[in-house]
Image (cartoon, rainbow, N blue to C red):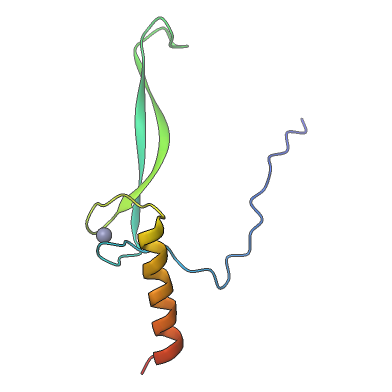
Length: 88
Ligand SMILES: [Zn+2]
C-alpha cells in the first residue's frame, strides 16, 4: 500500500508561540465536538458519538484560542517590546 499523506514540513524555529490574548498563557487544551450518529446511520448499528477536533481553549482561563486582529496587535507589541528591552 502506498498511501502517502501530505506532510506538514514547516520549520517552526523562530516562529512565535500562540498565547492567550486574555491572560498570556501559552498552554492550551484541545477541544472536540461530538457528532451524534443515530443507530440508523452508525456503522455499528448503535447510537454513537463521533469526536471531531475543533481547536483549543486556554488552559488557564478557558478562552478559545483564535488568531484575530486583536491578537496580532498584541503579538506586534510583544515583539516590539522584546526587541527594545531585551531582558533587562
Ligand atoms: Zn487565558
